[in-house]
Amino acid sequence: MKNAVKVIANVLSWVVLILALLITIIVFSSERNNGVANLFGYIPLTVESDSMLPTFEKGDLIFCREVDDLNSLKEGDVITFWTIIDGKRVKNTHRIIGINQAENSRSFVTRGDANPLDDDMPAYAGDVIGKWTEFKLEGFGTAMSFLRTKTGFFVCIIIPMAIFFLFELYKFIVTLIEVKRPAAEEIDEEEIKRRAVEEYLAAQKAKEEAAKPEEPKPEEPKPEESRPEEPKSEEPKPEEPKAEEPKPEETKPEDNSDG
Image (cartoon, rainbow, N blue to C red; front, side):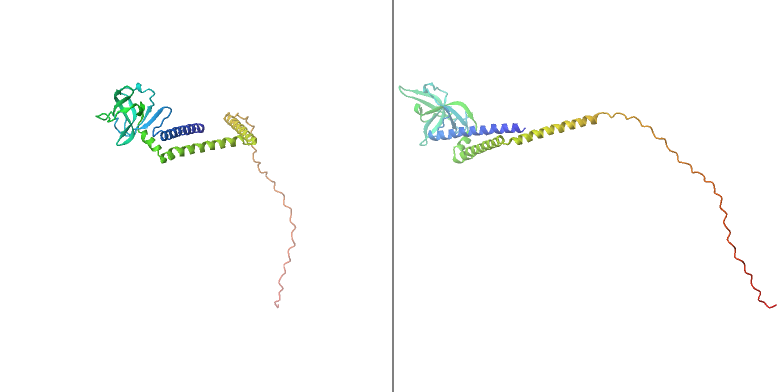
């Protein structure tokens, strides 16, 4: 059980580290490229409006891919491009509904799936950022926008990475201590195991002996019961004649009467 917990903890820590690194690359890449992150040719973008409902909605995270050949774009493709809205240069993701082809230029007429009218300005070839790969993560765009803030980056990236490195440092120290443990401790452990095995075997032997049926013991001859001796009748001994004591002489009273 402990080994399984360790494996799960290691896997989770590495997953967190990889995600943190990917998000870090996306954040720094977008800052260096006018807010457009590029991760190995893929461009993650947060949907800012509901103009493309029901294809995707505000708060979703969509992934576009760089377009090497603009001539490969056709009607029905969803592209992300730079445009001017309310006097600001912003990113927009709409569907191509028409293509304007001139001698040396190419532009695209676009419209949002939820919009009744075409966009005011066409998307020129130099303004195209990428083509949608038809892959999206619902609701993850909001999280990505939060991670791009200083608070989100600190809470979700810096702290998890610090915890990961502290955990790896702890494992390294534990491993180092185990490697440098004296050999005497290993011997003691072996001695403890040996004694435990001996005690277990002795206990098993005692159980087996206790489970064996006891052999009947031969009956010992009972000692003859001693009858109580009858009291011997003693014959009366003849009484020895007692010596008669001399009787005192009777003194007769003197007759003092005058005759």
